[in-house]
Image 1 (spheres, one colour):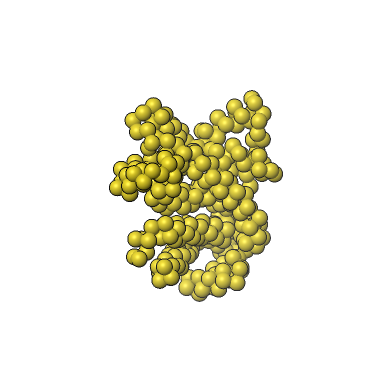
Image 2 (tube, rainbow, N blue to C red):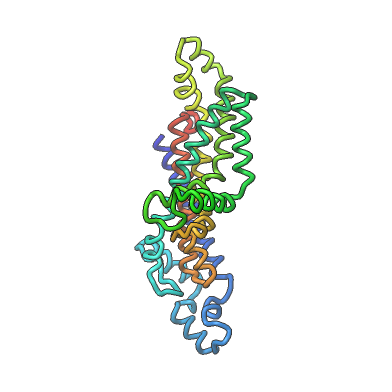
Length: 305
C-alpha cells in the first residue's frame, strides 16, 4: 500500500505541474495582455509602460518561474482589474462554491445509491422502471432549467426556501438540488449495474447459503464491491460540480468562484482566471487521487496485493 500511495501522489504532482505550465502558457500567448488592458485608444508609450509595470516585458520562462515561486509562497499575484490580492479574492468566495458542491454531492449520493440498489434488487419491475425514468428525467432536463423551476415553484409560489443569497444552509437547498440533478443519473445507473453484477456473483450465493440476512448480503457484501466504480465517478462528478457551478451561482446570486471566473474572463483579468483554472484542476487531481486510494483500500487487487 505505501508503494501504491507514493506512485499515485507522484503522478498527481506531475499532472499538477503540467496543468500549471499549460495554463500559464495558453493564457499568456492568447494575445498582448498589455494592449488588451490598455484599450484601443492607448498610445504605444502607454502600452509599453503598462507592459513594463505588469512585468510583461520579461520572457515567458522568467514570468512562469516568478509566478511559480510566488505560488509556493502563497502569493498568486494581483488582479489587473481591482488591484486586490488574487488569493484574498478566491479565498473569500471559495467557501460558497465548496458548500454548494459538497451539498450537491450529498444530495446526489443520497438519491442515486438507494435508487440504484432498489432498481437492482427488483430488475425489470415497476420499481426498476421508475428509477430508470428518474435517471432519464434528470439527464434530459438541463440543471439551469430545473433551477428556474425550483425558484418559481418552491421559492416564489410556496415560499419554502429563499431564492438568492448564501447566508444560511437553507439558501443552498435549491441550488444544490439543481446542481445534483446532473450527477444522479450516471451515479444511479452505475450503482444499479454494479449491484446487478455483484448479486449474480458466487460469493453472494455463498453468503445467502450461510443464512445471512438479506440486508447484510445487500449492504455489507454486494454494495461494498458495487460501490468501487461509484467512488471514482463521484470524484469526477464533484469536480464537475465545483467547476461547473457558474450558471447555478449566477441564477441564485451565489458569490462563489464560478461567478468570479466569469467576471474575470469578461474583463480580461488574467491573473484571477489563471489561478481559478489551476485551483479547479488541483481539485480534480486531488479528488481523483482520493478516489484511487479509496478504491485501493476497498479492493486490494487494485494495489497489486
